[in-house]
Image (cartoon, rainbow, N blue to C red; front, top):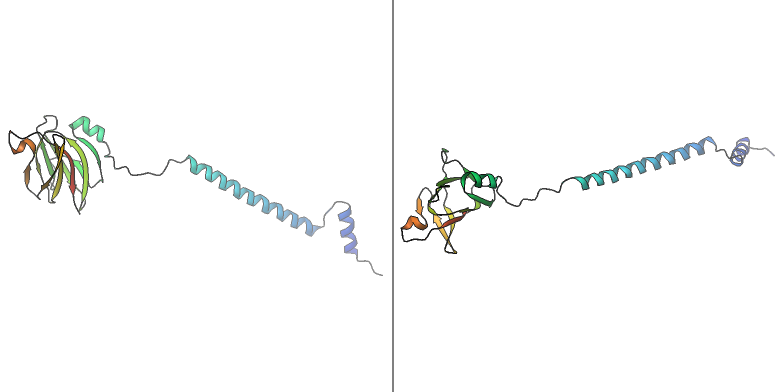
Length: 180
């Protein structure tokens, strides 16, 4: 009867608490795999924690940027819009929507349409005329608590409120809209 020396050595090492070389490598591989996967999991947890610390995504609320400063400087209260009608200086060389007001702090304000359509809500008191740019503009004005839609033809000036005569009530411009 022959004894297999390698089997006897394996049995002896196992009994004595030692592992054969192949078994040690397999065990070491399992440990490395466990550490790698736990490191991966820890990285994923850390990434998830970082994601909760980031600010929320930007949600467009259509508020006019810098509205408070514009109101302080000009008296024009810009409320919200889609960004396609912007307040600009009236000395600009491009076609502009011009709004004239009897309010001495406002006097005149101008707006540029930077796309084919757009809208902007505002509060400009005592408006007496609006001149259109190269678009047809729909203006919403209020007088005595009543809203009225006024169509401003391209390149034309339209009288509003007291601009229609001394007997007319003052009107406030509350929206400019260039339809699609």
